[in-house]
Amino acid sequence: TYTGNESTASAPYPRPTPEARLRRELEALHGPQAGPETFAQAWPHLSHSDRFVRWAARVAIERQPASQWSERALTETNTQAAIEALIALARVGDKALQPRVIESLSRINFANLSDALQLQLVRAWQLAFTRMGEPSPEVKQAVAAKFDPHYPHQNPHVGRELAGLLVYLDSPTVVAKTVPLLKVAEDPAGQEMASESLIARNDRYGNVLAAVNKTRPDRQQIAYAYTLRAARSGWTPSLRNAYFSWFPSTYEWTGGMSFNGFIDNIRSIALATVTDQAERERLAAISERPTVNLFAETVTPKGPGRNYTIDEATEIVRGNLINRDFEQGQAMYTAAACIACHRIGSLSIGAIGPNLTQAGSRYTERDLMMYIIDPSAVINETYAATHYELKDGTAIAGYPAFEEAGELFIAANPFAPRDLTMIKIANIRSSRPSEQSLMPPGLINALNEDELRDLVAFVLSGGDRDSPMFAPAP
Image (cartoon, rainbow, N blue to C red; front, side, top):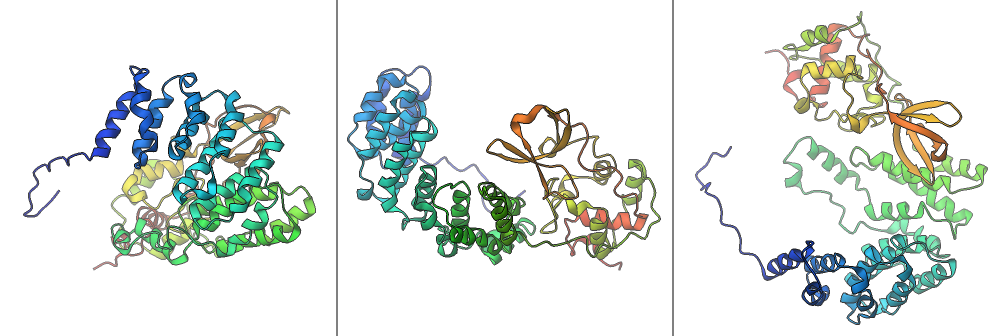
């Protein structure tokens, strides 16, 4: 609702710009009714200065049979139009045309282009391979030789894309050129994730953004580390050491709920490319995340507890979440093992379960009791475990974390969510959603009634010490 003196009448729609009108005209050609007239209307705009207009023109052309325009794309002389047309051809054209697409892309002089056009050209090369297939080793070598002299690049965005292309092409120099950048590359978006005014809009999400601003994770360095995870060529022992030594420098950085897992996945995939087991173990040791045992100072519940039912627990907490003990609520969050899988603010060991920071706006007291006491009654599909039957007759259930190079990594132990189990995808006979939650039932049964109330207050407040639930009695 709005309270004030300003008019709340509907504002008039802004008049569309000439670019907006042109884009809409081109988008009208995206439907099945468009025919050969598309080329006369759309092709001239492949070189338009507005990228949204170029996109609309390219998509219009892609909707027409590629056989009708592929030759024109391969022989286009306007650089901007040629890049757009060759992107279209890579996306929807006959894969047999790849050699000619490569030949046409090779005619464009990378060094003479602006940064914006260089970025588009590199992406066109990427599409020529990802959409039309991996080229021969000879072609990869020739294309790598074409781009090696231009890397590293002064433009951070072009640099990222060049690094990815050169790693794909097995460039012999990209690793040696990129590893040093892990210590000096600067985030192209600047170090501030959000302004003070944006942070002030929401005291919960804002606190996360404030923490990100404080630790200043460098997205450019992360992008380079991510790219190098798949590199196979050009490694030396000193480069391996430097690369894996970069990871500890990231462990103080703060990000969103999946940030730590994302960094850990980069490291895990990179380690998997090291074929020598002893070397892999050594590199794992120097890059390992410091172990923080959040259970080390766990406060044992005083009890006595009971086998709570949903109705009993709801009755105990409903209407009784005032003058609660924040310290005890936080202690019970650890004692009941919630911390193993769920995040509240920055408090978490793993994040294979729902983030509870906003629990107060999503759950009632009864909802929370149901999810805790009978976690298998309703399973959120986002966090559902999968039951895998393997060809050797064994079975395993867990949360699929990621897959890479024919291997699936799953979190099978809810109390050790960072300990991943690997199974070969080729060894899986069948899989189905598990009917049982990874979360064990009855985790609150050791708590007495006051401890239960403090735990629920801690969760529903999102771990906010200043919540009215923890205000002292008047």
